[in-house]
Image 1 (cartoon, rainbow, N blue to C red):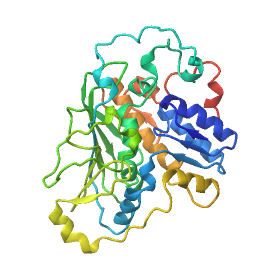
Image 2: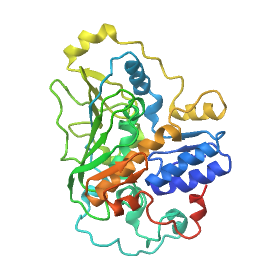
Image 3: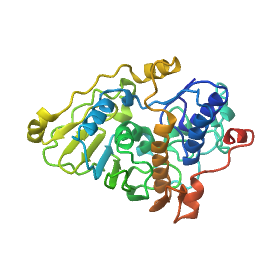
Image 4: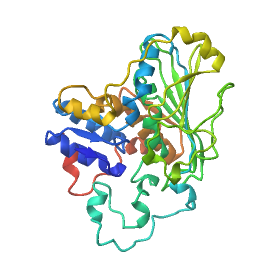
Length: 364
């Protein structure tokens, strides 16, 4: 089963597929809420013969293999900070942020089954601003820029540095914040503790066309990233001065990377030349991401982004979205999986109850 529908429907379709013993490929974000991602991981464990894969395609491309090889060789070590950025225009950047209610009711098109489209989300009156790509703009239906692009930018950092879940999530900057759709720009700090001998890591996320991060000396130019699939090269992703990507700050080196499968480079260039002889050979990918899923269904390979690997990263984004929505700093206990300083934020980990008729999908 391939799930490439709006964010809010990933969970019910994936849970149904797994319950029927069907292998499932789910586009990112894996789920819309923290709790949904948790249940999907539990369901995957309950059905160990079901193959799962999340659709962050770069996890089967160059950056995946390079990051692991460089980490194993000690080239990447003692990472303490990561800057992640996606500063291209998004659909909601043209909307009026002075919004005090949901859009007005419109006639439901005869070609649309609105009740099914909403799936488990509480009832909303139909309005064209909810579908045809607009769903990602709304807290009730989508995950904004963070859920859309974070999975392509932070996947290898999160997996190979064993980051797990943050203990603090702090929205440092939100412009045109409102209760309904995502801010025009966001700067969010995620703080991760020490892990297995590795130092604490701060990830700072920047989105919005007016919110580019500081870049280190020797960064160089930001050319069009060929690793972003052509299907994403729509109007909303026109190039800005800085392409989507990341800057990784380690003890001795700084690494520059793009999105999806883009490989890392060491900056400045002089430093890269100094260390060139120490760089290990990087294995080539044996399969692209969807082929990896299909080969795993046949027992030939293992998926590179199964729910147990990607689920915690999806939960990181869910925590970031809660901080965006409430515009407040959150403290999170990864042992109890609870937000400890804000009861309403903690309730949003689960979110609103599913609509009548969808409740059983939330029971394992």
